[in-house]
Length: 277
Image (tube, rainbow, N blue to C red; front, side, top):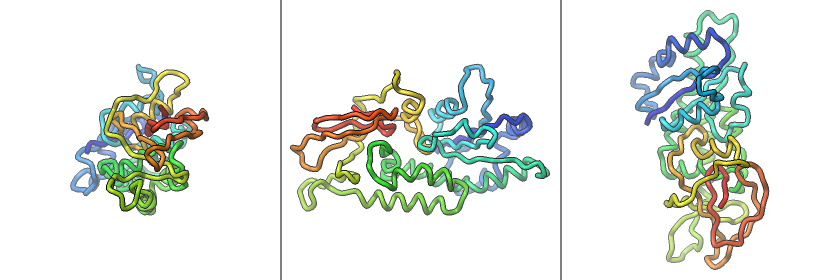
């Protein structure tokens, strides 16, 4: 599994540090025989004056298409660069104190505080079952544990409890998996939300999440990345009612927050970013 770290700051000295050190900024224990999920770990330093005119968040999305997982390491001076991106990025923040003797000590400690957590969520992205649970559309799958997850992962990204939070989420959502008819002949399992709608990640890629307005950055980025995990396919969830003959008719917010009625249809196509067809 290839992973990347994208450093963002307006501090010129810290920019120079990462330009000079690159992967050497990662503690040696995590570069060699660390037991992390990554076969390689690359460090990029975002240039606010890049020739393509990309914002930090646009640059992270671009990097995500070349790697399996991406972590954002962001200075508190540019907190707004990732504001509102909890559903998209795995993010940690740093605030370099003036009394710290050198960058190497500071960033070695900072990286050590979250690399195992990043490895854990990247590893989940490589598990079909756990990946599916992470890709459930936050705007459509009605479940408290999914609504709470983005903020929990952001707030505890550097803490030991991160892995427990992640595993608790998998246990809770895993408990929602059930066949439509218990004891029936069809053992196909679905994830069932609080409104008793049945979500199944389809194998087909016959539809695509929107690009043009009114779709915004979050709609487009949500096609490619979720909690730092890269999304390279175009699969969506097929959402149905429990009884095969019942047509689904529901009011939902789409990927850019517009609320509308959908159906009645045999099923809805809902993408991980919340786009609905």
